[in-house]
Length: 323
Image (tube, rainbow, N blue to C red):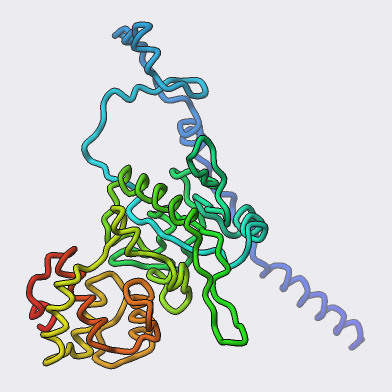
């Protein structure tokens, strides 16, 4: 009898558990009319004004695209050039290595100057690998002034050159050939004229990535390029004037860091000679005083820097940096 009672009690508990199980939630109400309104066609009115009809002469000036034409006869004043910088590099190898690297999926440049440029009708030939209106991958992590990621706003030129390598006599840098420099001069002069690139925005890879990159190296002839109308260079008499002034009272570290930042390098003003400052100063020396590019602080580098700021940024009083 007790066994029967236990069985009955177990059955009662089972039934109670089933009864307490929550019932399924009711299905949400769906506003099918709202869905129909979302996917229904919006009203379109019939045209009441006839379209402008272009004459054959006007139509010939239209740009033809897939399924439509473009009228470029009206231009907005609210625009500027996407291209603001010109960056020069060396490849670090020969022609074969350069073509292999620059036509792959990881690195690219707009132009390649080969080791011995071709020639046609007494004019040198440059290889264009990327259209100027497209973004080439040549700058990497980079900055100049208030800009970062300079791939977005620059044209990159690669020059076939071994760069630097070790030899029994120590570190050796490869010079550039006369034909390469003549082609680079013609190419860069055309680019800066077409895009109105400021002289101080004609840069080496080492300028926009100090310490990470050293190209185009100490043998790149920046002064010769400047004399051809491309890029920045200090005036000798102004450098001499600043050398006399700074010999008696050189810039403090804070002032030097501020001056490097004004020129374009990304340097925090810490007042201490830290590693970013050494790298930035070394990059500056690579560009403007390649005889010694170790990043050591000296009066000559300071004088060149202030002469450049005076010539291209209107800094006529060193006290503006000393504040």
